[in-house]
Length: 185
Image (cartoon, rainbow, N blue to C red; front, side, top):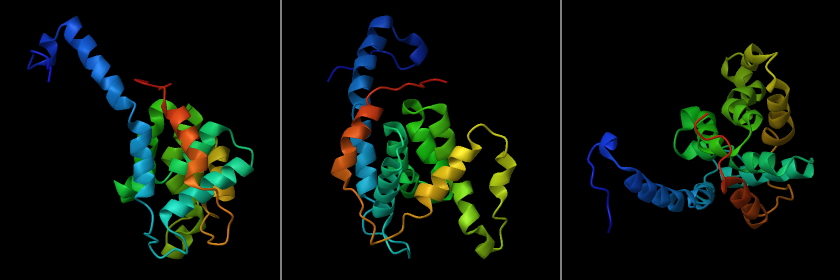
């Protein structure tokens, strides 16, 4: 297997970085598969809800699509909770960080903040302020995040809902993830 000659990045040559770049693109092409695998790993674990997190994610995306959301937003709805598997305490930030290179600033912001905004529906039952989201009032994406949670996320725990299968969404995921739009911003 070919490798570069350097042990410190500052010593690399343009040719070596061209070689590494080609390997990087091969690796990056697997991101959609990795995300779909993470999503599938959410099957079966209900955490006390009526549906597992996999079904919740499919339902959220189904609702978004049926509500007329654009493809990027539908993919964000599908993948909004993939961070649960890696970092349950800040899953929103993890999902947002993973998807950041592939989505608009607005969808990134919604993903990053949806966990806090979702708290509106349950924080008051846990002796927390349900209006913590209000510290973001006036932000350009505040209402879109409120809408995301109200119309799609908080209501997607219904075992009777006619949820679309993952196969319906896979081509969308692959299309959105195929090319970064916000790298190094």
